[in-house]
Length: 294
Image (cartoon, rainbow, N blue to C red; front, side, top):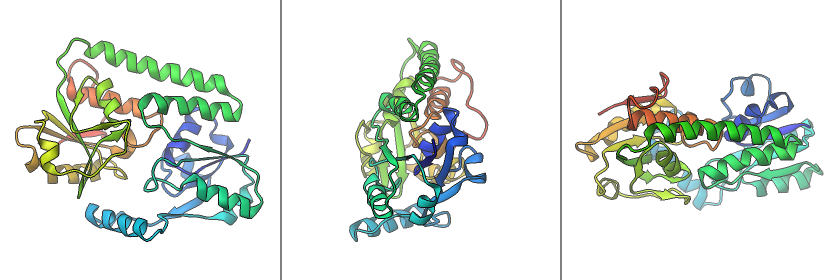
């Protein structure tokens, strides 16, 4: 079966299931694992925002959305040339990836009969369930079940290690200019790591808030996990928010690697957050994934 992934998390799921050789098309943002960029056809492009500030990116996104524009471009001819059997996409967030409706329209126009599977989890449990969904669609359901069993085993070990310990109050900042609080599965990660999320929206879309709203619950620990950034970018943004949380620890986390992409590495994210919240109770986070800035 020939697979095309239209979002980075789906690419990671495909490789975690051992199906990397079946993957023929990816997006320009698929950077994990490295093989996803080395020998796959890029079928979705978008604006390079690496030289833009967070507020400039936010302004660009809002302008495009209000005008009915698209943030991503589907290279339809390239997609058709791959003759895919299954396309993995999403409808969860127009800012994060191309909506499935755009894909359906393109396939109809091209006369392509590929199946489209939309992955739209809102919670950590739903994220895990998508791994089985993908495996089932490819005909290897048990592989997906086995992967989830392994990942849940890691979660159980974290839960055992932090059981009975005081749960620190944790605020998660998903964007800094303007500030957005944590939503979807991110609060679940903090809970699984032994923390208590504050100013968060479990299972719901992340929304813009004020710094006062984020600081009001007096979080003991603040995690800055900006979407679209790895650790270096997260550190720069975390340094800019320290003044809003006097007395709190402020940590930067590799957002794209561990927190915001609904793929298998979310469990590594739970382990990393647990290392921040309960040092000594669990192994330290791997180098290059977290950094304390205050």
